[in-house]
Image (cartoon, rainbow, N blue to C red; front, side):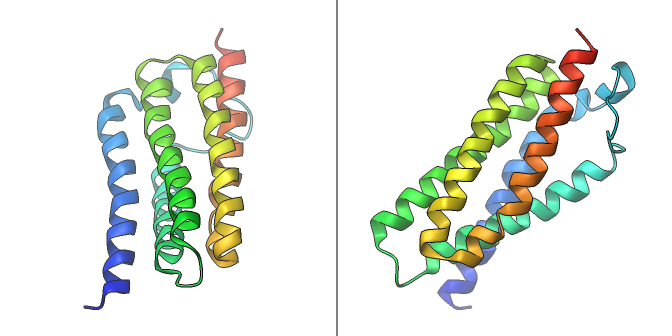
Length: 158
């Protein structure tokens, strides 16, 4: 197996592992939708793992594209990938804050930082590989939608 392919596999598995570990740590709190008032447009709970799996795969692919890019400088790639790593950490922690702690306002503020990191990742990726940046757009859109849901849940369940 060539080196580029290994990077893709590792990168996708890393993103999926972050999401999987977060889901594992919050699995006992996922019945949240049964306990709270949900806002309009709140999708059924079954949709979340499907969407997140697709997003983590896209995140892994785009990170591998940046890592494997030969035209970009090592500093550009490191900066972009560190920003992405920070977004993964914030992504991981958000579920715990929202589902386990039920700290809805704090989770919303945390999500705003996550969205900022995703946008920064897109910008840094775009300078290296526009396609890698475009693969992050669904992630930004979904997190924006999650922000709406998070804020509305906080408002409806004060």
